[in-house]
Image 1 (cartoon, rainbow, N blue to C red):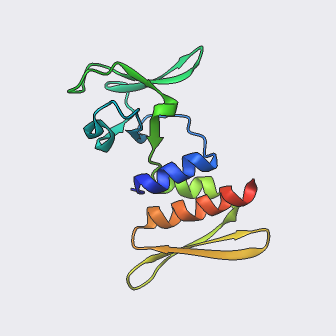
Image 2 (image 1 turned 180 degrees about the vertical axis):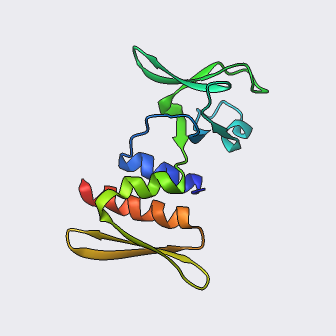
Length: 139
């Protein structure tokens, strides 16, 4: 799983999230809300947390399963933690290879004919860094 810091950087760079069953996220709430809530990772699921379309956008509705009182949060109050396969899919045609090295993984992409590589011990994090580069260059 990618770090919260990378997930926030991806969101801030413009990565759009359309919540789907099985997606993981953390909360990003105003300071007056307990920080414990932000450290917890949630999973979108019909039984516990569902994405609901509202006139103002998408809300993530908590169906009475959390320990603290929270009915729903807006998508803006959540930080998506995309899975490895989702990150790879988002790289689309730029993805070239994932290579296992001695102590790390290397994700290789190509943007406008320029090969780039991103290494990290966690392949998800390497994919996420590659995606951040791709998004940054697309603006």
